[in-house]
Amino acid sequence: MAESSYLVFPNIDPIIFSLGPLHVRWYGLMYLVGFVAAYLLAHKRLEKTSWSKEQLADLLFWGFVGVILGGRIGYVLFYQFDMFVSNPLYLFKIWAGGMSFHGGLLGVLAALAWQAKRMNARFLEVGDFIAPLVPIGLGAGRIGNFLNAELWGRTTDVPWAIIFPNAGNVPRHPSQLYEFALEGVVLFIILWLYSAKPRPTGAVSGLFLLGYGAFRFFVEYFRQPDAHLGLYDIGLSQGQLLCIPMILLGVWLMVRAYRKEPRVSTTNQKQ
Image 1 (tube, helix red, strand yellow):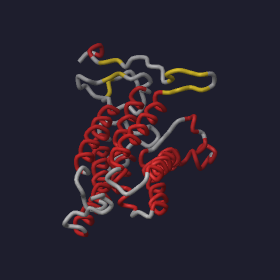
Image 2 (tube, helix red, strand yellow):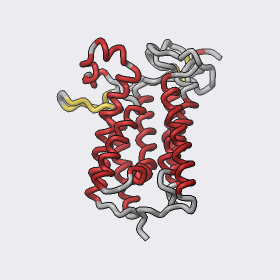
Image 3 (tube, helix red, strand yellow):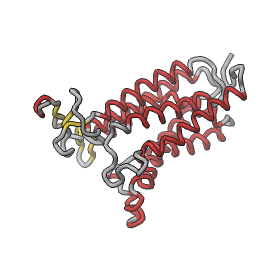
Image 4 (cartoon, helix red, strand yellow):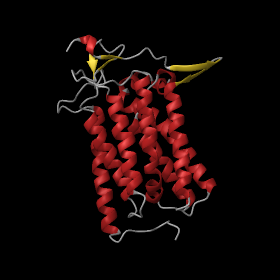
């Protein structure tokens, strides 16, 4: 197929607009979209719990803080550890970019554990409440990656391949859109429908970990590995290795949930 028959990524400025020294970027806007969506969906689900609006506000705020801090720390430790060792201050160079989902997940889990204790709730109950709210933010983040023309896919000759700037002038999988579809849209639909009915405590959290881990593991086969890491000798990327514990933990949580509460618990549900 001739190069001219492929899609060429348009020249999109990563900065939407500026107000003096303040630059509003697409990726930052996508974070805001994810947080607002989570806030609105959480309020829709709040009536099924015994929690107050103030407790929900604290839970979402500290969860968002966990995403930012955990995402940055995780990126540095998982993907740029050598640079961190040579220059520990690199951790604070947030303007240089770099966020990790798996690090953000660990940050959120830490925030949820803290808030669950404050709310006198079980950790997995809080996790089951938050899990269906996450995919929209994940999907929005992948749209941000696409608009920034970053984290592109591997080279391919499929008809929908895109030639991204600074990516070797070769057609590539738009893997950001694959992740948007699977980790964002499909995972949201699965979790939202599954959590619409009472489930054993921990089952929704387990399904989130299993679903995201499986989708991300699959899409990594189409995504270009990080240049400085490449693929491991077993043919897997760093992202795939990080997904394996998620998948195993997700399966374990779901099996544990149904064995512990086979009749389906209505814990924390208003009657």
